[in-house]
Length: 416
Image (cartoon, rainbow, N blue to C red; front, top):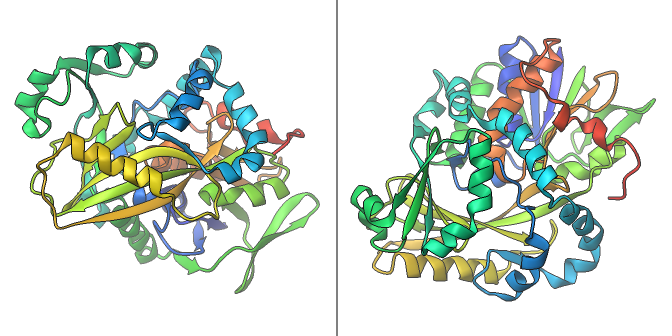
């Protein structure tokens, strides 16, 4: 078949490669090119243990204080609040223990073998060199901070996430860069890292093209519908038609999904990073700094601090407060670190109200498919999402239950 994939981030490129390997003719369409958005600016962690949503019990009580604390990891553009409220009500309604268990069970199946999925995707391509395996660490400044996170670690353990709790001093013997900053460090096993996410996705896209795939750089302005199903993507280059169409446009998927009847409550969760170029020292493994909920990751020639959550929509420019917060936290953590320059970035994570990505057919005919809404785990889950969709489109039953991710859960009338 000829298949169109809308979106050239890690999810779209992974889907395209697996479809190509299944024997299909594939065209990837993107407004700016491979890894131009979140796939460039993420923390680079293959977080196979990322089985908890942001919306855990108690977040509603904590959120107001966090919004007023300049060193808390939650930010809001207040002018956007009226538009955000309908989504926010549904988003916070999922902050229950039952929903956490539902989410964790579904995401465990999608993420547990993330490193192996990336290795399979990148095998025998130039992209393979960007993948490494190491612990993903969580650093707590005080015993009380670690104790306050007990709920999350209990849930991870219940869903087979393997980890080791060590003292800060023991961890410092392994990696002295943080000194005495942490009293407790949790080392999550079976994790990995991409040491340059943007270059990695571009290398995968180059491989896709070298194998005969087509990459078309043009914005998708609309879709053509007939009898309730999508028939074409409308672009300045004309209408693009194919046997099947996959939507993998991240936070830009909402408009098209709603036209298809997939009324997903959906927002952009804005994330930030700063990078220190040519730093005088590097950590040995990615470190989640628990006090600021950001990840410090060694990259090729740079040290990246990435994370945070801001709600402010797709159109507003980057806010200064999250970037200043990252700078303050990084200076406190590594006061003696030297570097050549500091770079800043803001991007958009696609966030459905229930935090679960949409993976599967949008219509009974299997004319179009969704592959978006991965929130914080797009890089981690992208390759497996692509493989599962390629299997489904090719008529093979995937080897895991995709029902928690079924776009059909939104085909009933839901307020956006």
